[in-house]
Image 1 (tube, rainbow, N blue to C red):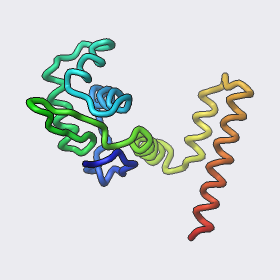
Image 2: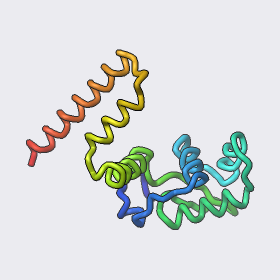
Image 3: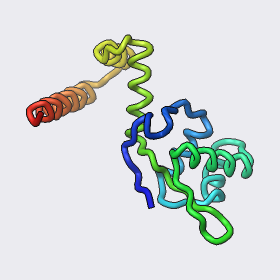
Length: 145
């Protein structure tokens, strides 16, 4: 049985072009463990119009693309996410940085800070701590090499 991992684009068939419904389904799966089509459908129905058969089809396709694991349970199937939210987010953000900022993370960071002009001093301090933590982690990884 597979476990959720921080898999790369290459490991998921190189595809991070997930549609809105696919992302919504993954968001439901990230909230729980093994879920039935009905579980996912009922959760999605709270916020959008969607057919049960559509949810079933999308889950089957996500399983074929290795974003979710599909397990037989009697007459039905259970599903759980195989790719973590962090891995998918990282994949999307790397593509955005590459395509829109020429691979320059600094340009991306500057953009985010400018767009969030209403950052409170507390949020800015939290951001500084996160950046310091990331720098320390990078330095530690380089020292191990």
